[in-house]
Image (cartoon, rainbow, N blue to C red; front, side, top):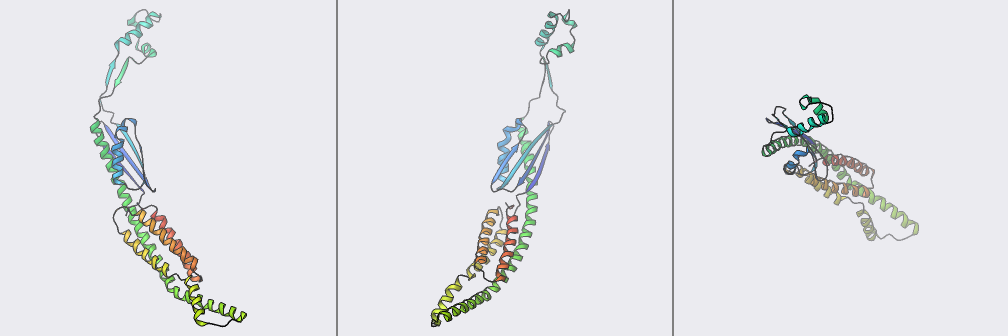
Length: 293
């Protein structure tokens, strides 16, 4: 079980420079990847994206690629002698100097610096791609390690909260029959009072049938059975390998639905109070589940 929140950094240094890849992930419903890199490395973006997609199933993934040259590379200086000569002649023709040999470098540079250029050494794209891939994998490993560590803590928290939920649920289950009996008793008293007022003869068999029908509307036995089944399923899913966030999210929605139904049916204060406490605990579990991959 992994969290969707993590951070990792990978650095690979070569003779020509160093790559630094930083990856940050946060929770979101799907896998959303954003890559920021210098323009000259856009050709490697697809490779980086494939590496990310193979590592993460869900989450917003932000990738930042930085590159720093070593500064020790020899650069090729080239001089455009023809352009330099034209600039000198121009300065002489305009009367600034009497001879081209007298024209200083500063005067030439004041007109244009295009007569001299600095050429970067040829780059080995294949080697650059390998270095970037290695740095990306290192960053991914860092993210995965952090997500796994946080996942362990989240699992412990959810398991602890499930224990509390089971305690509340067991209490509610123990009050079910008592609540139903109290409800039937109140119904009997009300119906008997009404019959006495209108002077209708008491027919016990029909009377009890009506009470049973009305009592069934507040019976939470089915909801209790389904909720108990969902708790078992949730525990089993927590032990599964791979992404489980969506499964847990769906199951928690079902558990909330059952609790809401119990609350609407519940006619005893102890059951209503327990429903409120269950909803609070389920909401805390839901907050954790939102960040599970």
